[in-house]
Image 1 (cartoon, rainbow, N blue to C red):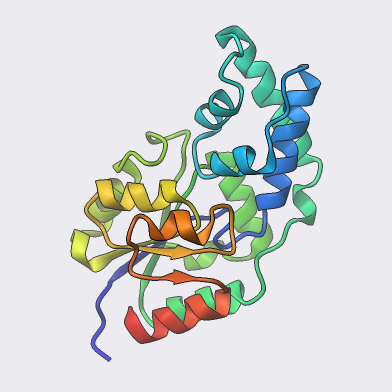
Image 2 (cartoon, helix red, strand yellow):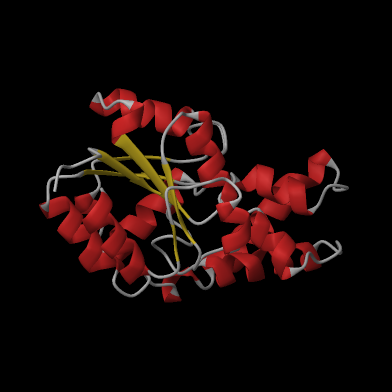
Length: 218
C-alpha cells in the first residue's frame, strides 16, 4: 500500500483515553459546588476538547469572570480525584505501538493542559511513541489551527500528508481550519451525526474500526 500520510495527530480524551464520562461528571460537580445550574450530559460533553477556560465559560455563561478560576479549581479537584482510574480504550496501546513501528510520526493535539497530558502519557505508557504534542495552555484552543500548524512546521510535513484524528467537532473543525484531512471516531464525546456533518474521511465506531481504517487507508 502506498502511504498517504506521514504525520498522524491524535486527540487524547475520548479518542485514545476513555475519559469522557469522568470529564462530564467533573464539569457537573464543579457547577454544583458553585451553586450554578448543572449542565446536561450533552451540554457538558459538547465542550470536551476545548481548553478548560473556554469549556467552562461555555457551560457557565453567566458566571462572573472573577469566579472562573474557582470553577476551574473545582473541576480539577473532581477530575484529579478519579483520573487514576481512567484507562486507555481497549486496543489503543497496541494500535499506537504498531503505528509507531510502521514508521508514522505520531503526535497529540489536546484540550488538556501540559501537566495533565504529561501525566496521562506517563501513566498510560504511551509517551515514548509520540514525537511531539500540543496542549491548550500553550496554544490557542481548538478549533483554532495553531496546534496543527505548529506540529506540521516542527516535522516539515505538508497539510495533505497530515491526518487529524478525533472524537469531537472541535477536532474536525481545527483540521478544516488548518486545511488538514480529518478522521472521526464516534465512541467518544460527540455523536456520529454531528461528526459526519463536517465530512471527515471516515467516522469509525470502535478502536478496532479505527485501526483497520488506518491500516487500509493511511
